[in-house]
Length: 152
Image (tube, rainbow, N blue to C red; front, side, top):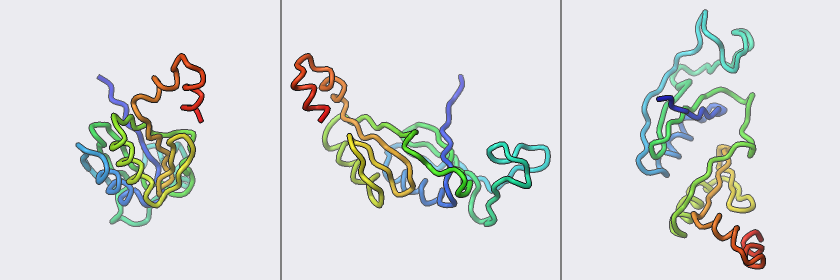
């Protein structure tokens, strides 16, 4: 079976970001850390050649961190400033009730910025959508006035 792992490119603050996310999501684990950089014969970060590749200078700071958030595999990369996060990619958290909505909203918003329609950008620049499970049902209500209110 193939496993898809999301790689998140951070500007040197991957350790802080992983610790933050691990503190929020249940059933989460810091799996491994690597300070290895691509060597000769290996492809450099983002397909750049070795002279153009982003290298982290601090050997105490891991280049990569493998971790799981509630069973989902992720990798954090201390890649540098070349590729900042944008809202073009976001993580959706489906919540069963208002308590869960409030929990994730408050913790992920800490130091970040709220956006419209349940979106937020956390303090690391990662975009999240905090979505009640019933949202789809409410948006597709046959009463156009009711579904219109949901959209507003």
